[in-house]
View 1 (cartoon, rainbow, N blue to C red):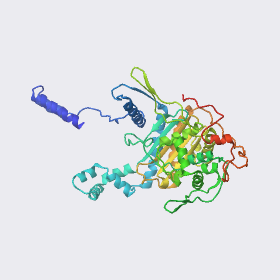
View 2 (view 1 turned 90 degrees about the vertical axis):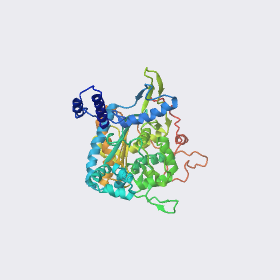
View 3 (view 1 turned 135 degrees about the vertical axis):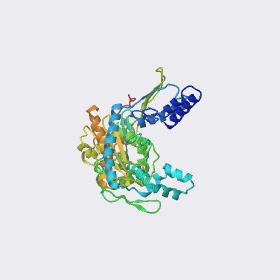
View 4 (view 1 turned 135 degrees about the horizontal axis):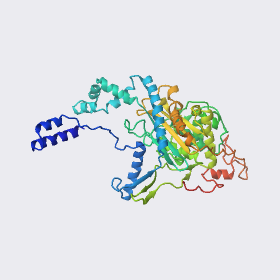
Length: 497
């Protein structure tokens, strides 16, 4: 508006100087406001701005490779977005994040971690001006700290709770809802598809998938005791959190860290990483003993996609934002979709899904039922160290949906177990979303879990297939083939609709 006003006044002065209008009239006109009702919009404004930005990234890559100009060639891009679900997702994120903001404000008051505050102050214009004026870094920081109004404003930004939600149709990989932050106009950073955060216990699903591949059954038991891992530096890592005694199904339902760490040792960190990769995690993973507890950062989008693999009988579908691209006249230039990879056998996927049912029915995910969510539900909660990140991913027939809640600066956290666990932060976001859309979802159930493997000796000596592994379920030769991702009893998967 300032530039527009200056340009208008220049034109009025020139008109007066050239005798086109009376100088007194020109002065009068210059004294008037522009009379424009400004409605600022983000440059990528749409009904789903983070989704649109993600589509634009994919479209730019596609167009560059084929010689198209996205801005000039009049392309028609058809996407997977379900606008009703998108509005429900945005409403759920806004409602629950506002409640969580009140909690964060009460816990932190006017204070936030000093290092987080200083880092934010260094991004301000006032700091940049002080540096431009010749002040060194410490002096410039001291200058902006003296501005009480500025500090209060920055504290509000640092203390702001952020949240994201993604909903995917497992059978096709179609992304139905995509919310990258509480408000795109306030924070354009995409916490759904770009931000890398530790997934906490939501990553445990891959440990138990690896165990099922090795021949374990959900009812197999661990003997108890703590997990001890000798690290490269000579120290010993002993994860805390829950006894390791009990069945695998119980360990997952109640998110027992000790049991999961022992199982990670048994399965192998590399196997856990491989399973996660096959199921849909595309971020680089740190293959370390703690990988099973979710210490390697990932995106919400890839985690929801990986859980969609479980809900889709182990068949992996790439998350899809675009269905096809056409010319302005309707000629189809490209379409997206098709078959995926069988990342888990149907047997393992259905067993894992049933174990994740236990999370919702009797474990850490019970609040989802208490909120009133209906249907055949499975899922997993996740919380990272010091309650910096809260996660929850749920599955029901036709839908996988997950939410992340946290702060942009990971030094800012929720300050108690009662307020910071994923079951208290991210789960209500998913639950609110499901309550808004569940009447539109099909009233069907997932396939039931298969029975236990039948014992069968497979070599002349009568030795078990899996040697020297106590508590491991017996397997048949066909089951062994299944463990490598093949199902000899089922036809090849059809193309996605």
